[in-house]
Image (tube, rainbow over all chains, first blue to last red; front, side):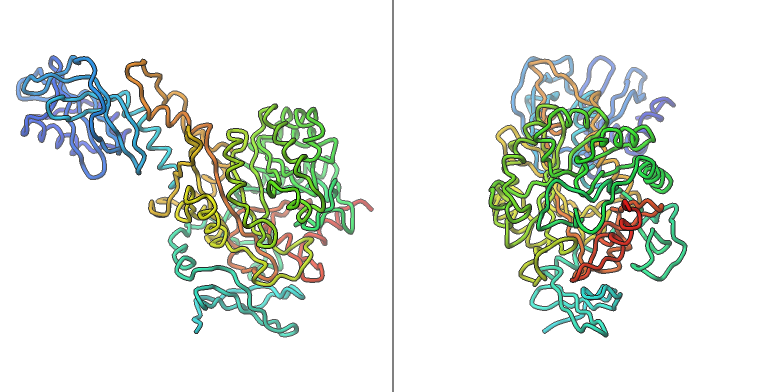
Length: 148
Length: 455
């Protein structure tokens, strides 16, 4: 899979402290294992790299090419599914349903529920960008700030 | 069996001469041993737990020297101070005294208020002290207006306003709260003038405690002051002097009380009694509370809600000067500590004084409102609630062990980040400014204030 990162996205991921090589790694691993979510031409993949979970959303409309639309990350650990709500617009790579729901998210011994996209069959969960770059980042910052 | 673990310089408690001192480990305690050629040998307890004392070294910061200092002479610490080029840490908080008068005469008083002379600097002299601070300290600049008791000055609101207009970023008021309890209008004026928080002496919840620390039962006044602060929206840090002879067995209930007054009460700051200023005894080791003593009592009396492990040195002052914890007060009233030694020392200590100043000025400014998302009802986000709660419902519990002539170490003076400003354009480490000998002689306080007092 050819992974392309447009200039404005490169700028964004650099600002978020992500490495381009990690983004390529996330896409290639997801493609190889066929473990990602799909909505139309969009795909959402994730991979734990070191102590962070890296997410990449890309456009798969070009054959054999993934054009990265955005990437984000969090340090928190994803835990067990708390509840499932309605079916979302996302599907798994092999076409199975994905629900909106809540999962446990843990950081430095604090465990709280957070909304997530959940694969009911496997319990695999994805945090969406709006949450990861705002509230989750703020909570992580709160803990990190105490160390600084 | 004892072992030498370090060398420093200290002061003779009888004549304040600078003398060499050796740190020894003995029976899992750390002592300073020093010998004055005229007054003999002193052995003073400074820490309990040798491993813990040595372990603190991992929290030592990369020192950042003040950008400018007022004194050129070097190699004569602590006798020529102002600061000098030997000083290794820049300022995080400036103490500015605006009177040595007080509406109390406490048996314990670091400032020896109401003694010897009348120091009540004019607004022009105070303007000069603000200017010294602006000349030597980097923004954000945090000033503690102190005394004596600063609220006895009717022009206190003018003094506060002047500081804010000149560019001081954060002003806290060190007060016994007596006038603020009796006169809520004055409290409102002080707040309107720009005071950000009160640094409020609060030694416990029993009248008997105040009879020992302040000479009379002040509990009702203390509670009334807090009530008035709740009414006008003034944040408070409760400042509690701690002595094994007075209230060390009461620290848990003070923390419990503080929790019940959050968010008006922002923190509890325990100050183990240091023997400078006015104090009634010549201290023995059994009259001292070391930082480890205090933290163990907090752990025991809060039944582990706050553990010793939750307290870390700020890394701004010397690592053996202070410790702090930060907790969110949860919905059920319990403390959720955010600080832990298990997290390790700070990653970047090169700008620690700057960070400390920002933290004093506004602890939670870094959590921007825009980062908190209002979720739809069916997508409730407990992490958002947690962050939201943390912004207002938090409690710091901290301690600073001030040095007196017995416990003094020049390496701690040189690392100090809390400085008293003087009318002649100097900044002097707070402890050093206040230290006096057994018979009352000081190196700085009385000499300085007498020079600028009313004739």
